[in-house]
Length: 371
Image (tube, rainbow, N blue to C red):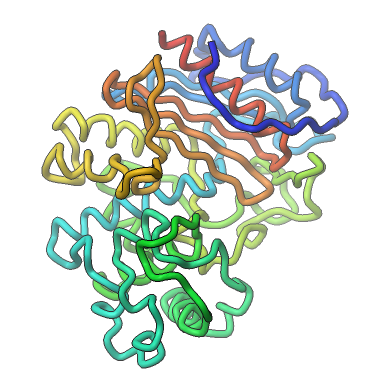
C-alpha cells in the first residue's frame, strides 16, 4: 500500500555502519530496528521518528550518528531543524491573535501598515492574512534574504526591510488570483503578528504557543555549538557534513516565520498533539474545535493548501494533513490524521534527495505500525 505520493530522485552515497540506537529511557519501540534499516538503506547520518495521538507522544526512536564520519550517536532528545513545518506554528500563532481580536483573517497588509507609503502603490496592500498564510498573496517563493540584515539588528526591523523589498516588486498578480508557495508571504504574515503583538515573532512564538504547550527546548536557526558535535550536524544535498554548524548555519533569521524552528521530537509532538486535541474539542491554545478546523481547511477550491498544512484524502486516515520541511541541510515531515486521532513525525539531518525518500518510508512504517 502506498502511503505517500511524491516524486523520487535517486542519488548515491556511501553506506554507513550500523550504529547503536537510542530511545527514551532505553524503552525502544518495536519498530526501532526497522527505522535503522531505513537509515542504512538510504545512507543517512541520523534518523528519528515518533507516533503521536490526541493524548500526546506514544513512542519515539532515533538512530545513527550526529555527524557522518564520526562516532557520536544521535540521541532521542536531540534537536531537529523543522524547516517549513514551522509554518503551521506561525499559522497557529495567527489564529490566537485572531481569537484575541488583534487581527482578522481578512486583515490586509495595508490595514496593519497604513504608514507604509510604498505599500499603498503595490497590489500587496490588499493581501490578507489568510492569503499570506495559504500562499495566495502573489509573492514569489523567496526574497533576497541577505539584504534583510541591512534593516537593523532586531528582527522586527529586518522583517520591515523584507516588507519594503516586497513593495518594490513589479508585475505582481492580484492577491487571490494565483497560488504561489511563498516563504516571503509567511515572513510578512509574521511581521503583521509582530506589529499587533508589539514583539518579535520569535518572542511571540515562545510566549503564546510554546510555553502554554509545555514546549521547553525550542529554538531558532541551526542546531549545536559551533565546532562541537553536541547536536545533529547539518549535511548538504550531497549527503556530506557542512563545513560548520551552529545557530548561524541556516537560512537568514528574517525568514523565521516560514521555517527556522528547531526542537526535539518530544516537543514537536506536543504541538502536533495540540492540533489533534483541538479537533477533538480539547485544545489549549484556541477556544473552539471550529478554530482548529479552520486552520486545517484549504482556503480556496482547487488547491489543497490550508494554513501551514496540505489537506489530502488517504485511505488510512480520511482527510489528513501533511507538510514537509527543509533548510537544504535537514529534512522533516509530518502526517496528521485528525479523524483517527493520531499522527507521525520524522526528521533527518541531511538535505539530500535520499533523505526525502527515507522520510517517506518512515512515514509509511509508522502509519502502518499504528494501524
